[in-house]
Image (cartoon, rainbow, N blue to C red; front, side, top):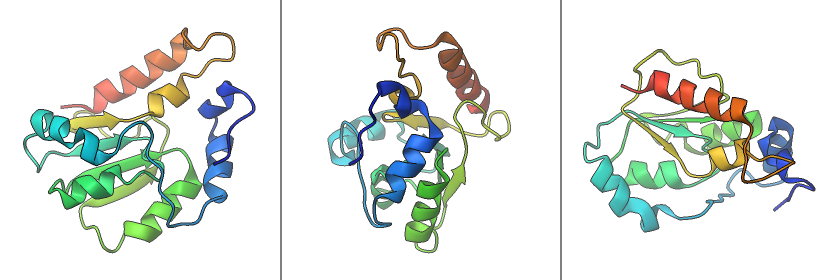
Length: 155
């Protein structure tokens, strides 16, 4: 795993493109928890498995794949790394109907208003809000942009 020299690099597209280009197309990495560890929460809060789910900053996590295998078939994955989006399309595109991958920045979503029932983030906001000055005081503009965009696409 390639770690950045400064935390603020976690918030850059260049860091993530470089990181994903260093790994094979089959590599996966899950921040914080695996699906097995959070499945009971997802099932509780998203009981309708036909819900349209937006996976924010999917990276090369196995979360979408694990959810798909658990019956959630309508998942749209976004990440602003073109490298990882191509890797994930190649890996799952033809074998996971109902799953989509789009290169997109969570601060500028191009989906229509009220397009999704659920949005899931398992580390993206942490990376986007990394600050060089104080990790406990994320940049206000990033917080506002992310929350506004996600709010607009929710039903």
